[in-house]
Image (cartoon, rainbow, N blue to C red; front, side):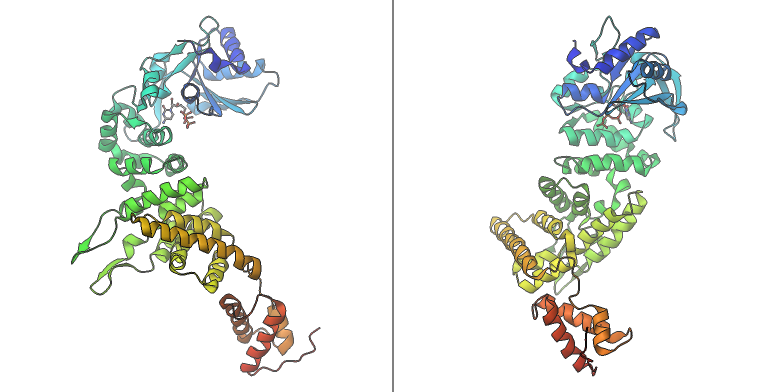
Length: 474
Ligand code: CTP
C-alpha cells in the first residue's frame, strides 16, 4: 500500500534526500500517519525514526532547509527537534528498549525499524511510511494497524502486559484514544490495564493530567471516565470521584449515585462548551457530597454545605495533581461553590434573587448557568422541561436586570470617601455599615443602582446611626 499523498509536504522530500545523503533509512511514524489515514485534522508534530542516528539526520535536514532552523538536541534521550513552518519535527534513532521495573527510564539500544515498531504503544500508532527515495510512501504495518483503525480497535503490538509495564502511562493513553476516537479497547488489553492499574503510581502527575485533559476535551468525556473507573485507574488519580459512587439506602430512603450523575453532567456540558475549565467544574461540582453525606430520620439524605467543602477540595486536588493554582483553579472553585445557586431560582424567579446571583457570580454568571443547565439529569420529562424552561427565564431576567441595574462587577454608587466627607468621619465601622446597607437595598430592589438614590439612603442611614451630615459636599 502506498500513501504518497500523506507526504505532499515538501519537508518529506527534504528528509528523504537528507537520509539518502547519510546513507540511512528514515520513516514517518506514529500519530501523523494514524491521523492521515483517519482524515483527522493532521497533528502539528511529525515523528521521524531513523535507522541510525536521529540527531545526525536532524542536523542534515536543518542544513538542507532554506532557513536552516536551529536543532534542539536532547542528548539523554537521543532525540532532536526542529521547527519547519508551524510544524514540530522530532527525530529519533530506531530503538530496542528494555525498561527497569520501577521507573520508565529505558535502557536504550540501537535497533531496526521492527524493533522500534514493537516498542510502540498501539498498533494504530506503529504505522510507518518509508521515506527512502526508492520506496517513498510505502506503508509498513506489521501489526495490521490499518485494520484496527478501520474497525476502531485499540490494541498493543506486543503482549499488553509488556507494553503497559514498559510505560504505565500507556494505560491512560489507551483510554484517551478510545475516548477521542470512539474506539474499543481490545479485551486482553483492557484486562491488562485492570491488572496493572496500580502501576500508574510511578507516573508523574503532569503526564497524567495531559491525558486527563485530552479525555475532558473529547466530545464525550464519560467514555474515558467510565473506563478509568472500570479499570481501577480512577481511584489512584481522582479518588474524590470514585468516592461519589454508590447508592445508600436507609429506611427505604435512597440518594442518587453521584458518580454516574457527574458523568452525565460532564457529557451534557461538553455539548455546550469547549472550555476545559468549565468542563472540569462539571466534573468536580459534586465532590463535596462524599464527605458531607448524612442521613437523618426527619429529612433523609443531606449533603449540607457540600459546595463549600467541594470548593476547598478543588484546591487540594489541583495541588496534588500539579495543576495550575492560578485563576483557572479559582474559576473552578467558584463554579463549584456556586453550583447550587441557580437551582433555587429554577423553582421560582424573583428580581432580587437574580440580582444577587449576578452580583456574586460577576463575569462568570453565564458559565454558571451553563453548568446548572448541564446539572439537570432528571429522567422525568415534565421536570426536565420545567427546569430548563425556568433557567431560560433566569437567563432572560439576568439580561433585563443587568441592563437596568448594572450589578455585574458592582461598584458602589456612593464611595467610602463620600460617606466620610458627608459625615466628617475618619475611617470607621459606620462607613462599612452604610455601604452594606446601600448594597443590600440595591440588591433587594429597594433603590435603583444610582448615585442620588444611594446618597439619600446614606443620609437616612447616617441619621439612624446618630451621625450629623455637613451637607456642603463639593
Ligand atoms: N508513544 C509510545 N508510548 C508513549 C507515548 C508515545 O509508544 N507512552 C509513541 C507512539 O507511537 C506515538 C508516538 O510515540 O504515536 C508519538 O507520541 P505522541 O506525540 O505523544 O502521541 P501521538 O500519537 O502523536 O498522538 P497525539 O498527538 O494525539 O498525542
